[in-house]
Picture 1 (tube, helix red, strand yellow):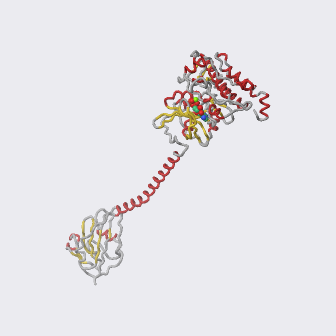
Picture 2: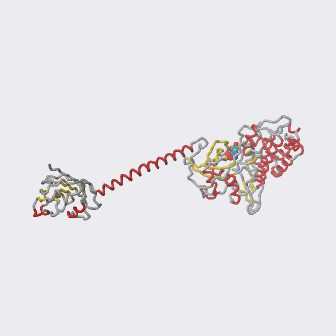
Picture 3: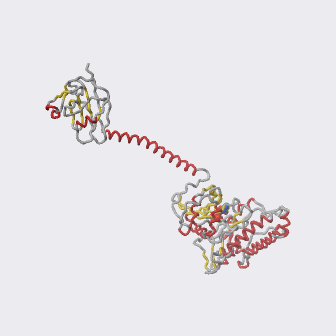
Length: 532
Ligand code: ADP
Ligand code: MG
């Protein structure tokens, strides 16, 4: 029985045209052919066949072939003597992969009489090169797609995590979008790294930066950007004050609305006065301008004092002599520092506060005070005798207004007049403090000045009537006269709130008097027994 071997494989030749002798060289077949010695094969086209006939004879079972190539279908004998010189003998049933670039061929070999006559279904396979490219592309996609998906997933997880972190309690105001830079004069240049330094370290490093009492200009915005707001701790004339966190440190952030830009600018200006840093002045870190929900917010970043304002503190605290005197003396020291001009290359202008009151004085953890809220301050230097009122037209708090403000006789060209206004108000503050001093088990409730003669939010005219027309001052409680320290305090207070501004004590005199009181022997004696 004749056995038929049908082989299908692809062949390419290095040249662009089909060269059948080349085919013989390139054919790589496996298996064996069950040969018969002589038989005929179909041969086409005839010009390729011996004697130009459409048949040919095989020799020794070289086989008949039919091939489909780029020139169409050809058939013939695989015998050496034929022009085709295609030999199906040898190894068969192996798909031979041609070199890239050559023509594709599909070849069927068979080995019996005229076995290649009816062979027509020779479909050219896709080019191997294309196959390989597809294969490589598939491989590439199989590697790249999972990596891409992984990267996108990681990015999403990180973004979600960061978003959740910002939303945690204690960062209600985050995220803060900063679209605007500070005005150039306030350090418009930003830096990105302040490292892990504490604010105190940054402040200490800033001694030579010449940026006033706060952080170096370059650091201010960077620090501000890292603050999260925790809770609202106060409301004042211009907005709200928040406790904020910078790394592990508390700080106070005063947030001005954009319509109070003049106040923010003024307070920033004053805090950036050289040599302003002092124990008796609220510590300042930085100013920053941010844009949030298309609304400009102006920040002033300061030391945080958990006791809050003197006003808050006195509501719930009674005092012994020493506590009273330390509150008064430290506040007076702050006022002296403000009022004093320091002449020199890197000097300091004299500053009048213009809004001295217990709500603008803060109580520190060590029982001393410091003066805050410098938004209304005016400055003066003797050298050019120029008074800088700033661009802020707001006036001080009516309850604390001196008579010359209420009767509008104050001469704004005369800087001392502003200091005298401060001293008047300071007298009222000492009165508020002294009421809380316990003597022989007695003390007075906290009351604001003139609580008994004007309404809770007195008008300018209410105050004018009481202070100027009726020449009233807060009452000195009777018990004060039987206590040596409180008696001296009452004298000091009355020297402060005199109607004639020039007759009032200077802040320096107040501070010295308080210092003397602090050092009085009877106070010292009591101090030793831990009573003062
Ligand atoms: P305003 O200029 O709006 O009057 P203030 O600076 O006087 O603002 O602050 C308003 C209130 O916020 C203060 O009376 C005080 O209760 C609180 N406050 C201000 N600064 C601090 C601070 N540094 N630490 C703690 N509380 C503060
Ligand atoms: Mg205030």
